[in-house]
Image 1 (cartoon, rainbow, N blue to C red):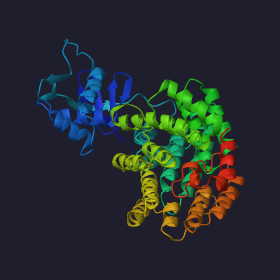
Image 2: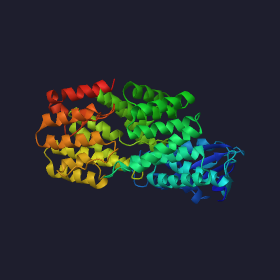
Image 3: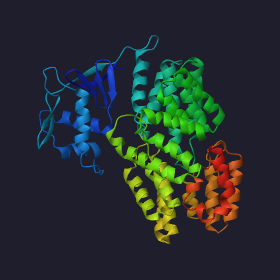
Image 4: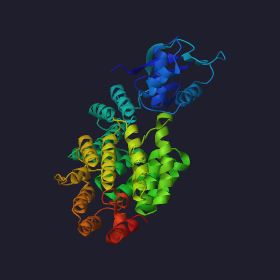
Amino acid sequence: MSGGTFVHRIGAFEFDPATGRLFHGSTVAWLPQSESAMLRALIANAGKVVSQDALRRAAWADMAVAAGSVRQSMSRLRKRFGTAPNGGEYIATIVNHGYKLAEHPDRGQRHEEPAPAGVDLRAYDAFLRGRANLHTLKLANILCAEKDFEEAISIKADYVEAHIGLGNACALIFEASRADSRSDLDALRRAVDHARFATELAPSSADAWNTLAFALGLQGDAKAAALAALKAIDLNPGEWLHQLRFAYISWGDDRTRAARAVLKVHPRLALAHWLNATVLIACGALEAALEELIEGCIAQDQQVLTTGNFPAVGLHLLRGLVLAALGRLDEAIEAFKRELAFVESGQVYARECAGNTWYALGAIYLRQGRREEADAAFQKAVDVAPGNARALAALGRPIRIPQSGDPRVVDTAIARAVVLVRAGRHVDAAVACRHALDTAPPGAGWILPVEPLINVSAHPDIWSDVLAVIRQHAV
């Protein structure tokens, strides 16, 4: 191991192009993708003027973005650097032409902060790589992070932070596999094992308990997950990330309170808006959910321009589902198309989101009598996410029985309800969903009030008992 990271030195700053980290002394900022890409373009063309169009292509490729996106991102980037010691600017504006670096950067090796006491430098190097990869929320990087953390643990078996990192990586790998025909239950098991081991090694580590809460929540153990999440909050009550994780694994009023607490600190965090909206939908408060989702969609669209981790997908999808439930089908279609235009292929939840969006689009086409377009959309859903049971049901194909321990049991029950609805057996569909909810953890089935093909609003009497159970669980 080299013991350092190759960086570009710009005055007193050091930029790591591989991870998007910008160092200034002992402080570090994680640049969002847009700022990181534009800074790399400026460095690659040091001494030359880089046009706004070239910067836009570097940051967003062919993605459609607002007209002022380059100017806004560049303004934030320049503020990070501030004023140079000579009173000038690190990044100069060339009016009507673009921007350029005021000085040529040097390339060298950054020596990270010393490894913690008792930690081999090789293990620490591997841990730092893993942490940088994990923060991107890109599946390819997370798979690399898994190997990085495993390497750190192979060198130091009781490396608490590496076990925490590996627990999170394995949990996210499982999450990504939900789009597949078979969930990666081994990854989920490993997530629980490493997170639990971390809590045993360091019982006072809030991050360890936070990770255990995430893994147990994915495993369907809602009670144990909530206790672990509350333990993390108790150990570090000022950390909003613990509130976000609690919101993710909890339900009802607990989710609402935690999501709102996060939004007080980060009002533009798209994931928190999504979490809050799910409870409103379960309660049947569709107009209130729509207001929440409008804010969430704005936040999702602005993620490329803002800092921070936890980039979310699915806000436009969920907004479209609510619009469809309210009978605003043309607006719903536009929302689904917008989701598909913004889904980034490498994100952990991208395939699952894309599959669900294509399925929703097909359901609306079917309600409009556009059968060929509907079938094409359902097929696209299966192509993108082979594990999308509702799309398989819509196409009349066999629904795979979940493996033992797979938490997608209620999803499968809803898919079977889709089959029954398509056969005109609405009462049987409602009975099947009610039976599944009786043994499911709170929060399961929250999507039913806006499920686009089942369309409960078309048969309110038949679905009233099921919706009452979902509302009761959401309180």
